[in-house]
Amino acid sequence: MSDERKIEAAIVDHRLGNLYSVKLACEHVGMQAEVTDEAAEILASDVVILPGVGAYEDAMIALNESGLSKVLHEVAARGTPLVGVCLGLQLLMTESFEFGHHLGLGLIEGQVLPFDKPQDENGRVLKVPQVCWNRIHRPASVQWEDSFLDGVDDNEYMYFVHSFYVQPANEDVILATTTYGDVEFCSSLRRRNVFATQFHPERSGPQGLRVYENIAAYCKSARI
Image (spheres, rainbow, N blue to C red):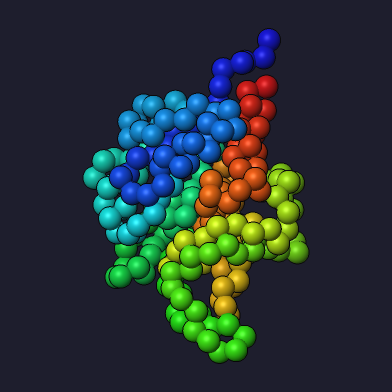
């Protein structure tokens, strides 16, 4: 007999960012979502989402002082889907150079780097942060069919708000890239059960919501 229980999504509450817009996106695709900082609730969920908008250092202090850093490591070790969004993607990395040097969760080896005066084809310096719709590109050697980007069109527009970007040490984890001026950066990655985006799927229209639909579908299939 199939399990009709709704997929339970835990949205990690570290007091920074777009927590409730992520909650609404989860609910829109039929998941039961809770914003929480309770370890037991996070560990009992079908999927854990780490969102965020704001300062890297502040977020890591909040995660470390609350004990949520250890909880997220346990989530990843258990094989539970762990999804990072925007700052959440950056927090997964080894280290960040956002206004100093800060250690991250270290679940994905790599760095968080600043945009350094990105320029367009005419040499005009672009604004930082990047606040705009921009395209995500599928690398030639990558397939999206078995990922949370399944069904999203190559070169689709997604919504970005960020001044820093991630540079994974291993290019094999990169699912999508985006170009801002003369800077090409990783805009989505995956390593086993850890998936993350620099863009905001919950603010990217139907194609962005497809990401949340894929998350829900994956969790349902995992029950079978």
